[in-house]
Image 1 (cartoon, one colour):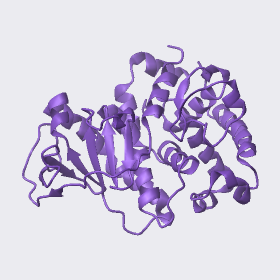
Image 2 (cartoon, one colour):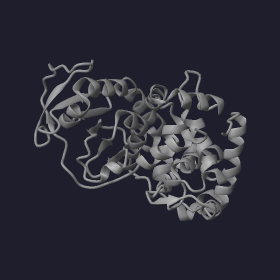
Image 3 (cartoon, one colour):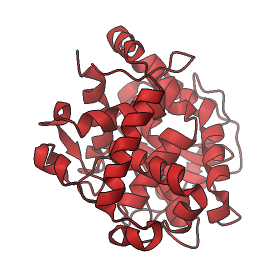
Image 4 (tube, helix red, strand yellow):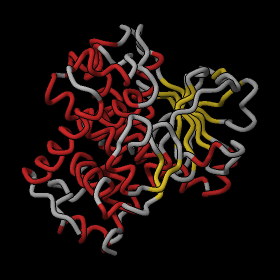
Length: 331
């Protein structure tokens, strides 16, 4: 169990990804909201249009339009499916609104609700290797595998929506796209969805270890910032050698000494990217960093005065010091 939390989080990082491709447009929705589903307190509408056979129900919130899958309801059972959605809906609007407020200076004035589809049955023909992704062409989020994975990935994907499709200066892919999505969802925002999922989904052994390593918040939930500081430290150290992980460009690699000693913007993990952006914001200020989120990572020196390699090793010290300040322990 020594690295149980590390292994779990690496699997979750493998599930996070950005994928932009064409696909069916969201279905039209009727104006009536008289339906009820067991265990779901939110108004339900019948869907209309080409996707209504697969997604017969709609649930609307202030920030999202949920398209509920008939096959997923059959897979999980209608009551269990609705219970998982209900848990997310309790926190989703607050989490999405917090991300909007943080990024507001760089976003367009109007932010339309995002369309969200579940596909726990794996109809996406291979795309379900991700836990979730944002489709830029259709401006929707697809969720795979389970409600627990969805809760942990959803705010990350929503930040992609904001920084790619709701701004006049779309974020550049790779370091800034994934790093900012991780920074906002794990450092800058509370991410209530992730905290709730971690509290209810962790085993007692994992909770015990997380407590011993000082990774829990005051409510007994996994603290996203502490988790990422810890995991970034672990994966770049010898403890991470031999681990398979997704880079921020979604290439699957095995961590080794060569990668750790010669980091590049294309070989670092999601954990490193999220913490690296937190470091940039801490050192240079959010305004300067976000004002240049569309830049080429190869040209960091033009804005920040140092190359990626120089900034990375300064971040390396910053991350280690933050772990010490927060009294994070290592297994």
